[in-house]
Length: 234
Image (cartoon, rainbow, N blue to C red; front, side, top):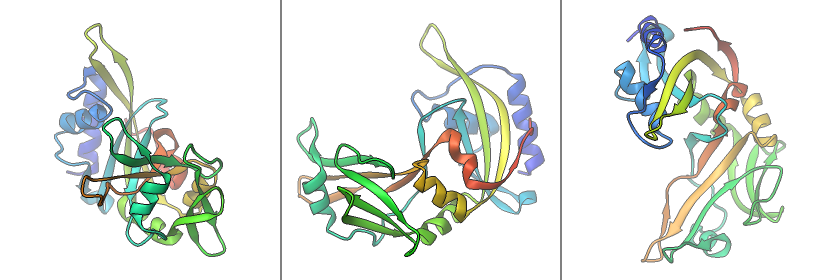
C-alpha cells in the first residue's frame, strides 16, 4: 500500500464521522483504525516512504502512556528475583510482583527512579537515589527507537461514549513523524516525558516472569522525539 492510498483511506474514514469501537478497552482505538484501513498489523510497508512505517492511533488530549519499545537484555545489576523480592509487593492473588512506572524527577512508591548519566551514556534505575539496580546504554536505546519508530503515521481521534456505553471515534487528524533524535530522546528521559515500566512477578516455582521492561511516553508527547513533522495530511 502506498502512502497516497493510506491517506485516501484516512480521508474517507474522516468523512464517516463517529464510528463505534470494534473492541472494548484501551486498545480499541488502534484495532478499530487498523480494521477500517484494511490493515493486519501496525507496522506497514509503504514503498514511497522508503520502507516500514509504524501506525499509531491516539485519543485526542489523552494522558495515557503508550509503549515505544521494550528492552531488558543484560541490564540488571542484581538478579531479577532479588529485585522483585526486595522492591515488590504482594498482589491480591498472593503472588509477589513488581509492576512499577519509574520517572526521572521523583521517586515512586517503591523508592525507584531513573537517572540519565550523560558522561557515561547510561540510563540508570536506582533505589533511594543511589543504589543501582539496572543500567541501559542510552545509545542502544536510541538505536531501538530509530529501528522501531523511524517513521510514524500518527492518527488522532475525538471520542465519545454512547448511552449503551459504546466508545466511538472520529478519526480527523493525521501527521507523519520522521527522524527520531538522540537529543530529543535523552531530554525526554531527563524531563520525565519518557518513563520506564518494570513488569515482572514471581511464579509459583519462584522463577521470575518478566514481561519486558517497557520504555513509554504519553501519547501527546510523541512528536517531541522527532526532528520532522508533516501535518495537514487529512
